[in-house]
Length: 311
Ligand SMILES: Nc1ncnc2c1ncn2[C@@H]1O[C@H](COP(=O)(O)OP(=O)(O)OP(=O)(O)O)[C@@H](O)[C@H]1O
Image (cartoon, rainbow, N blue to C red; front, top):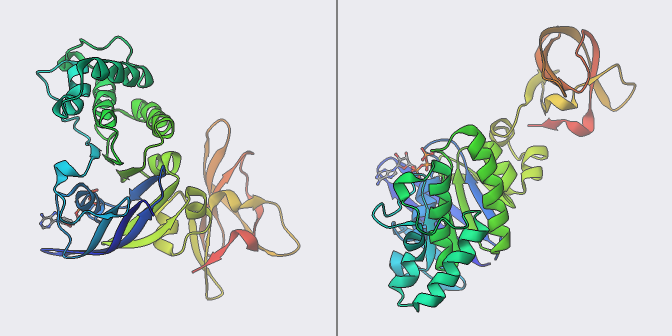
């Protein structure tokens, strides 16, 4: 394992985090979960801003517990940029290299390479105050990449940006992360962001890891109801004393003969969204969310057993 939170325990006033988590080299892992679940706490342990009460944080085989933040060679990007306003773009990106007394000509080449990768070619002399939010965030990313960190920590890096820009930048972050092959811990409370950028997602609730798996596994094979409901849309109904969980897209039109549960009902709510429709099917006992590529209408529906999880 390249990065490891090993038997970590943190006790804050009214919060307790227990964490065992590891990241492979070159992997992007997202910490996801509702507000207050402990995402930032886990990240602060990695950065060295917080000492765990128990356990070890290990990076590349070395126990980091006693190593101060500035000696860990970890890059961090926060949501609020934290750039130096009095320095231009190239000096911001080259800052960490200059502090390491690296030759000017080497810094220049490195900064240009990074600017190129971040689609910020020729931005060298631009002043920070005149950049857009997205550009500032790319410069912040560039500054962390320049020091060739062993681990990159991204703490809600896109939350200060508008929805469109967030979508564009998350793809950019992913492709840069892959290009630089940089091991990354990404913290977000946005499930869509987590699903699109991650190799694996660690979903936390109240300081406990609920599931650690690929986005597909998390969506299709949630280990408990919390995970199932947190990711995507879902149905959870009780039928003949059985608690059944299934996704709206698993509800299919028509009656099925075998290995499925049949419903008969009326579509009481329906939205046409172009390439698909979303609606609510009212049966005798339940309201069931339905998503379909066809227009929705009242009648017989079924869900195959293979698409149902019993919790
Ligand atoms: N220094 C501290 N002293 C006491 N309690 C703290 C401290 N820092 C954080 N907490 C508490 O620990 C819990 C977890 O906080 P944390 O910031 O890790 O959550 P989070 O998952 O990052 O939430 P958010 O998405 O809102 O940022 C919260 O209940 C918070 O109030």
